[in-house]
Length: 98
Image (cartoon, rainbow, N blue to C red; front, side, top):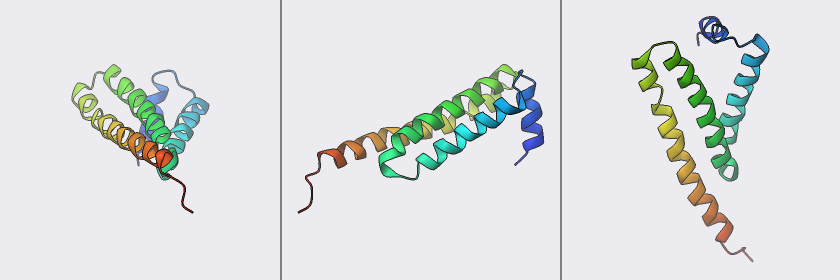
């Protein structure tokens, strides 16, 4: 983890330390929500938001190659979202056990 460089990078876009901490907390919440099957779709959406914002900043910095690479986690999180959506729908339609 390279927190000092990441902090400096994000501050270069005008984010305060408090805003960066909130952004980190949102990313952590997304990761934690991915653990529970019923919250996995929401966790994937939050994660996609976090990765998309990070990718935006990377592209804005002019680092196109790393920006393109940073889109991969967004695609993977979308796959998790899609699968979680179908699993959650299946759980809701499943008859209750006696």
